[in-house]
Amino acid sequence: MNLEIFVLGTSGMMPLPGRFLTSALLRREGELFLFDCGEGTQISLKMLNLKWKKISAIFISHMHADHVTGLPGMLMLSSQVDRSEPLTIYGPKKLHEYIHSTRKMLDMYINYEIIVKSVEEGVILETPEYTIEAFNLDHTKPCVGYTMTEKDRPGMFYPERALALGVPKGPQWSLLQKGEPVTAENGSLVTSDMVMGPARSGRKFSYVTDTLYMDSIAEHVRDSDLLLCEGMFDDSLLESAREKKHMSARQAATIARDADVASLGLFHYSPRYTNRELKILRDEAREVFPATFLARDRQIIELALKE
Image 1: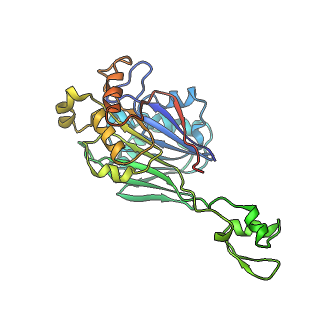
Image 2: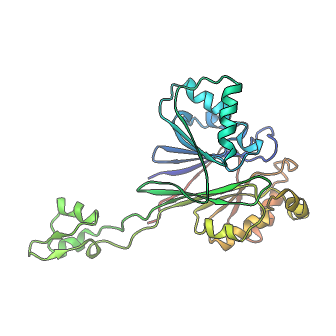
Image 3: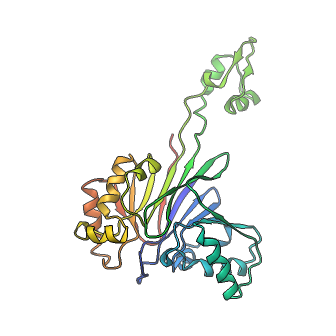
């Protein structure tokens, strides 16, 4: 079961050549979820040959231009490729006003339903297989982070155990794997826990951008397989980060360490850093959390299943 993260844009404040504004796409078994939609998002999607008409939900962190300027074009583009499925967009309360007014001012023709949902902290989307949660951040505008967490999968099925208990290969094995008890050939009851290993945890992706450092973030992103987190400044600009309510790379690494995440991808870089200078952010973060990398535009990260 594939779970891939496509980094579409890594720049904060303004786009640069080869570094578009903040955006990331998650693909899970054919479902596509877009996180933020900065300027250049459409271009990265096209370059990666991703089918934007299949995006089922968009999650906006906050109403600053570098996170939403790509949204009007995205909405119009979806109508041009004959999209018919509804599109749900989650975000702060101002998001509904922004989308409504933009559609009106630009006289946008859209041939599908747009559902805008204001986000509050907690679970905002749940299916039998995963949950998506929002949690409050501390920025100059109302801002949230997001996590996508897969629910536990059944444990490994051991055929030799079933055979030893008198359950021959056949439909009963399928029932056991679904958690249903069966009757063995000798008349005894066989339950799933007798032939299967412990439940296997799912994968977790966390998305955090535009916030002051907060201890509470670690609890929300705990045990993430990938934390994509802003690391906008280096230590020498920590005071500027505080004033603008952003985090340094070292602070992002502190969250990753405290949350026991598997991997930290830095993004939402200040445009003051050239591509070569970004290693300053990476090196400072690695002093705290070695499993840190610099996310790059159009980078693809696959999160493997846990066996």
